[in-house]
Length: 196
Image 1 (cartoon, rainbow, N blue to C red):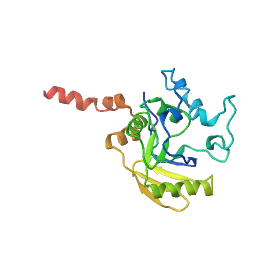
Image 2: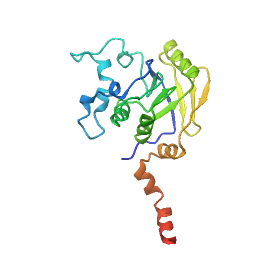
Image 3: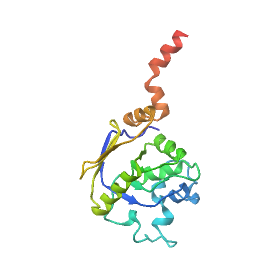
Image 4: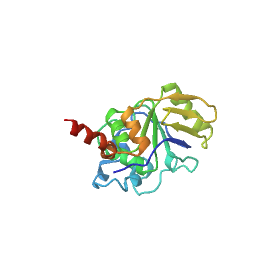
């Protein structure tokens, strides 16, 4: 499945200042019945967003009209717990292209990158500045530049670099999943086979 290309994003953000958010909190197990990547966004953070009667929980950031955008800013150790790929599907389907945290669980990071969701890991002190910027102005903008591998607080110009595997960076920049990438280098593969 091809993913949308990602190069540069300027967006507001939704703050979720909670540490140790696990994959069951991102998408509860009872919603894992579907095998297609569609529809999971409706239930992302379901048990935090809605009460037992299905009413929006006041005060939860995704229910707060002040917040929006394609960037989710979360506390340390995001995506811990089980290895369910559905967590990345749910966040992406919920309208986010970037998750910012000071630490990601490895399996979640890989699942995110495989599904067009960019995990941006920043130092803890910089993460505090990001939360402060959003809390000070819910319309604060942030810039994510994948080619330069930088995350910037637009109002102050403060910027930090982030790491990403070169292969995954190329895939996101071009909108490739693993199969698309292989198709893109088909001439090189065929040339290699001919030489053998």
